[in-house]
Image 1 (cartoon, rainbow, N blue to C red):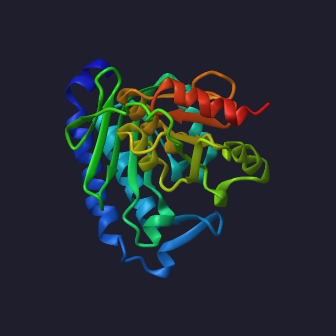
Image 2 (cartoon, rainbow, N blue to C red):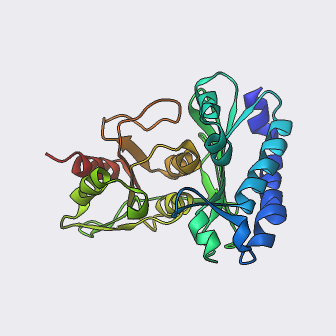
Length: 274
């Protein structure tokens, strides 16, 4: 069933993603009223009516396209954490972040995106990263490469001798322990900066515009689409435990992503410390 869907149904997913943005997200961009923005776990953890409505739209559309599938969406999990357990079940799972970069969206910054990935038993099979305000759609299918607006992208390797450009988990969303771990990247030969939208940071690595990433949180909706995109562009990733990050299990954190295997390993080893 999944192979048939991957062969025939991908354009329908793209249409659903584009429609969710066109109907529920973009009409609210730079038009949000104060009552349409709420805090979840603190003043920097925001959710808007666009997040909720877009996830509702995608939940209906995607499960209709693939009967028997489940949806693990950021807002649904916030309302009911047990929804996350679908990632460990046998049914196909849509992993959805309706507005990745909500802080940017609220501030009128176009650097946000909608993330959708399709996984079965923890294996990410296809992904969509749609930045509607930037008019960019990145797609990947396992074993078939990574594309932006229909053109293939490759991550390549960092220039020899140049400082690694690494986006790290934003300090607004990290614990003191996380900050101490990420500070291990403050060494000669690494130029780090706080990340914005995780999905768009993954896209930068897949394009070779950034050399690597270091993340400290496991939320599948932030990582699933980007991990496949980077892998299909030629990149690599690893947790500090020395094994790949997976969405269907507990992971040793933080984890590193790189344009190539050597870069991912270098970032991982720095994060591990002595």
